[in-house]
Length: 242
Length: 242
Image (cartoon, rainbow over all chains, first blue to last red; front, side, top):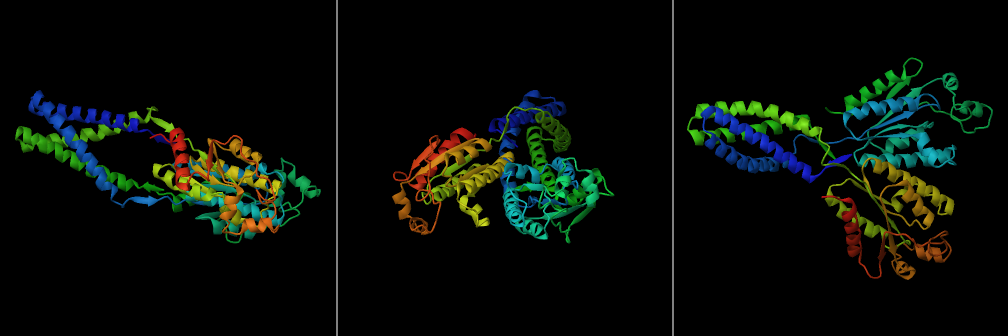
């Protein structure tokens, strides 16, 4: 994010005044043929307009109409490991960046990489969700919207997130376990099936399908490109005013 | 945070054009005594200036000069329990809010309250610091500065924070353990001394005094008001350009 310095504002104001006054002088000169009077009129106009512009800004500062609070949303992608959450989330994030709203991308793996020994049991997942919920809440307090992708296998996990955050949109990335296994480039499904990985959602741990998802994306039918368009349109309609 | 709607921009533009054109017409009329010509000149001026203003904005958009990236800082208050970190942190936060920079307050207790069973052992504290570091990093990525108050008893904890974040200012809130005990309105020192509370920094667990603090506040000499002024001045000099 950038801020503009006071010097830039002053320079911009001066350059505009120069253009505006010159225009006035030229117009008056063309109409009346008196350059001396045109210049005096231009200078008087400059001084008057600086004062008037200031007054105009002061008055508008008191007008509340047309100012609206930015309503940050939280797109929450849930689904089996390798269902396509991260790919779709990245696309949604990229597309939403065009709308000049502050937005942040959160992905399960980035956070888990920080704390490698974080467990996958019910209790560890619960505490993890509360922390992620707190992170989102803090970002939203600062008007930042979120695109999050987390397996979040329990209905309870999603409920925590909905309770802690504002304008949560739960997106269920639906993929059957066979398709996920086909994309198993990390070899995690193999490890889970052999028992090497425990608490692996969909294999040796439960994945509770969301009952109240706002959007369901069937990855057997939709490409990531199409899926991200559906999500972006949903958000545009509800949370982005142009 | 608020955003201004397009309708507000348009209304503001129209109202200014009305003021500006009227001014021009009045000036020209006073100078030359011809109302008809004054009105025509005013209208031509209006059309010309709308085009010129647009051009002027377009040109300035390409000028990089006078735009600077907001550099978020991280004020990190460390010290014994009840040394006065929270009080001073709250004051610093309040004073910095005046400068119209996005800023967020993080206090140990708010985060710990979310996860009550979070431990105070070395390993738990270490993981906790990484999470807090990640939270600060994410906020800073969005140009948000931080006022944080955490006991953070280990040199290692403070190092993690410095490594993970930008522009960290370590403030050591120095208070001898007797003064802290005097303020023991929560009864935590009593519990620690009786052995009911374990891993309590300063009583039955170590507090490593910071060796490389940027600011040291001696609470025996300085009031919270004075302490917060010192910190705010330090920040103003380095990170807030007016």
